[in-house]
Amino acid sequence: MLCTFFHVLQFCSEQKVLDIAGGHGIVFDGPKDKDFIALGNRFWAEGKIVSAVCHGPAGLVSMTAPDGSPIVKGLKVLLSALNG
Image 1 (tube, helix red, strand yellow):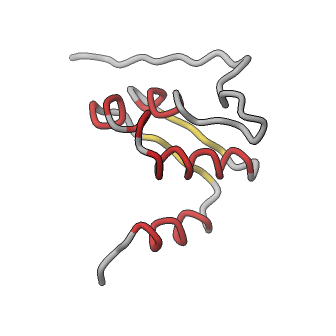
Image 2 (cartoon, one colour):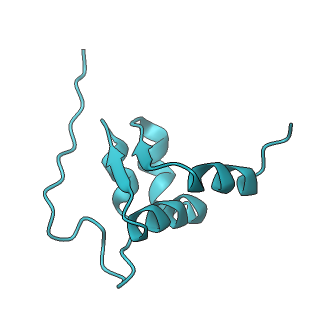
């Protein structure tokens, strides 16, 4: 089955948590990917959990609450990675 972005959004709408994984991809692509940002904004607006690990918080940078403010406004966000 061909999985289009519509299918991804349909699947995601049934989920309760958006967990953003770490890695370099989210650092460089996440903050400017309009579809990803829209998905995070929707989860936040619906009161669902938006979480991130490792480099994942970089994906939160462009997400906004319904009033247009950053979803991280007033929150403490820790970004850490262990390099072994």
